[in-house]
Length: 117
Image 1 (cartoon, rainbow, N blue to C red):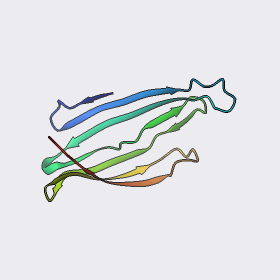
Image 2: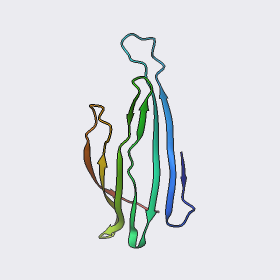
Image 3: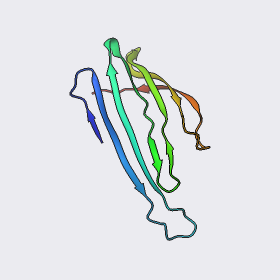
Image 4: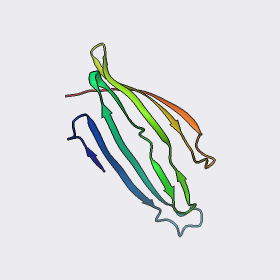
């Protein structure tokens, strides 16, 4: 994982990992081999507003040769409700590849309570 926080008004980076199943010799379990990537790109504006990539993982299943690449944009603001700092955002998500599991469209609404030092 790498996240650059030194560029003014921009955050960028990525989280990447791969998952292997070590139990492939057991007859009741399926062998797993999946790669995951979560790109991070956020532009910060005045008064706590920001726009960026969604927090969903892109994945590739090496066994079934299937991709899962959700696409979306997050619009949010860090503000206060009373004295409590919060992060509020909305995130429309589109799933262009239909693997039979994911929804084609979704909307994520979020409120995160922040507790800075």
